[in-house]
Amino acid sequence: MSNARQQRAPRSLQTRLLCTVLVLVVLAWGAAAALAWHETDDEVSDLLDAHLAQTAALLRLQPLDELDEERLNEAPDLDKHQPRVVFQLWHEEQLLARSASAPHEPLTQRRKRGFADSSVDGKAWRVFVTPGRESDVRILVGELQSVREEIILASLTSILKPLAWALPLLALGIWWAVRASVRPLGQLGRAVAARQPQSLAPLPSEGVPPEVLPLVTALNDLFERTARLLATEQQFTADAAHELRTPIAGIRMQAQVAQGATDKQERLRALEATVQGCDRATRLVEQLLQLARLDAEPADRNAGSTALPEVARQVVAECRTTAERRQQRLVIVEPLPTGIRIPLPEPLARVLLRNLLDNAMRYSPDGAEVRLRISHADGVAQLSVEDSGPGLTPQQQARLGERFFRVLGTGQSGSGLGWSIVHRIARIHGLRVATDTSTELGGLRVRICW
Image 1: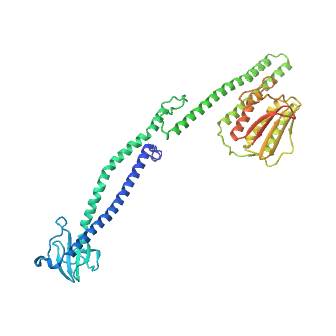
Image 2 (image 1 turned 180 degrees about the vertical axis):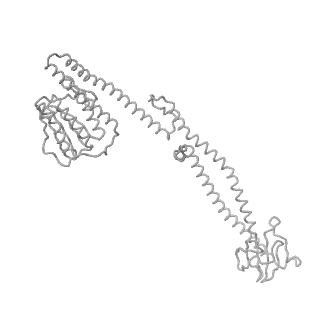
């Protein structure tokens, strides 16, 4: 059960976007309400304080001798709509006059002009104090704090009530806008899901929003690369089947010759040709596997580097047996510069060198010379392999690297995959491959630069 909860499907983009926007709206609404409460409280309090001060100023202008002696101590309320706004007139410690709702105790003990907060008979008051026209007379005008709070609450309610009604409408509008905004993604998903597995046609980009267009472009690029890869693989499979058919047919033919041979020497020659055919088929399969591995590897130019002179000596030593069988000379041009590293892992560096040397020896005549040179100048390192073969025309050099491409009429066996392996390794790891004619040996010169 816990695993099922851990593997719960993530929420949709629409849900996450909607929740995020709604939470932000609610937080912003709450912050606006708090700010409105604070501002309304300050503004209404200032307004009510001004009303108290104005009332006190009017009372101060009223002469005491004009008040009715019988009603001096209990005057009517100032305003029939505000019976809780009261006043008191004090002379020293004697209450001269008060409104009907005012208490008998002083609203505040403050004697200087100004505002004061006080509590009388358990009720909170806001009081304004000002001296009267006669000496030793204080005018106190007060208002219950509860009344002020009711006024502030009523003012705030009148402001926030429309916003509270608008909040659900705003949430509904956000839901509709988010749903409409992510609809192209849903349509794109349905279009991709409805495609046939073998379909690699590009997705239509007309009418796609700019935010979704990069995704459509990336998918179309992916489809295009996949189509090219499939086409290459299909061509590669067809060519590989054709190339494998030739050595297998040769092996079968030589085996049949050996079966029907009556002469011992003829049988030995047929068996030797059979072994050579097996070796060619093995070499072809190895090269096919190398190409398949290179095609499957991602392009990583930070896979490491290899000390080239040491690897070159080792590979040349491994190839000397084949060279000696044909009385060829493998020469490393000395001195080899120290500290030169090729940006390849050691296994790929060996594959690169072995294929270059194998091609050079294969197309050089018996007794010829093959040279390997490593140099460094002006910040550019270079590996070159020169042979003594017939060389290639510029048109033939331009086609080197095409899979199964071979120059006809050389009388040499091969599959044409060695050059494909060299070019693939160079392309993956950022090496430059150049070919021309060797000025010293007359054959082909191959240069690998980095």
